[in-house]
Length: 258
Image (cartoon, rainbow, N blue to C red; front, side, top):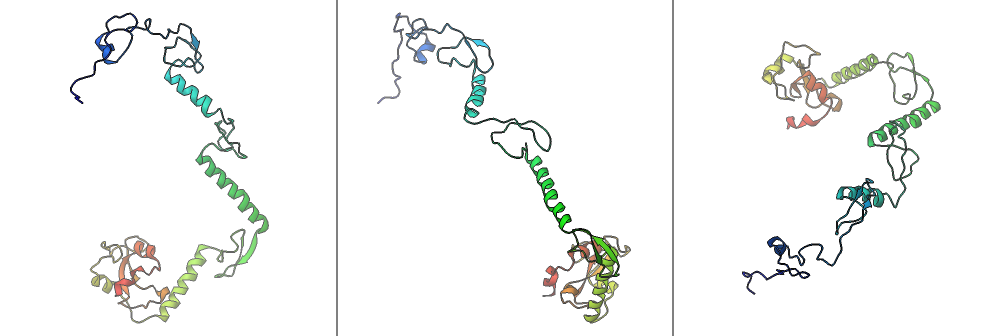
């Protein structure tokens, strides 16, 4: 088949025999106008179901909507919401009116209101019930032996204040340090040995700063004393006060001894 030759189309109107224009020939029309076509023109006027305006439709368009925009709005309202009920409830948290297709016991409009409702429900169900079953209890402090009052934290709390907590754990650390003492460790010697660099973050240490300044120099045990480490120069390293406190008694620095 020779594709270089174009097929010959209709050149004259099939009703009146008038020659078609080039535009009509290219679009492959059969009739020169709508009067010659066998389908009559629509002369009646209709009312749009979406916007309520009166319009005269074309031959190929729908007679229910005046435009594509109105047809889209009408289909969303009629087709999408036709097979299910629509509710207009009020949100229990923010008080706004919204659209819902599902009937719920508790109406919530968004995820933020759901989070607020969950927190509120948790406080009502957990804290109130615990306070009822576990009222205020008088306990005795483990450090100073004074009596103090607690409510739902009674199962966890042992000390009456933060001062008693610090005093208790400092004493425990001193006792452990005495048991694992090998040799005396000087901060100046550790500073010269490590070239004044923090072994945890790799930055310089300022010897003029003092605790509780975050950049002040401290001695950090590579293997913590609470995990069986000894107090000697091999097990000591230079560290900032902030780096030492953040590390705590984690044993991830034990690889430095290998």
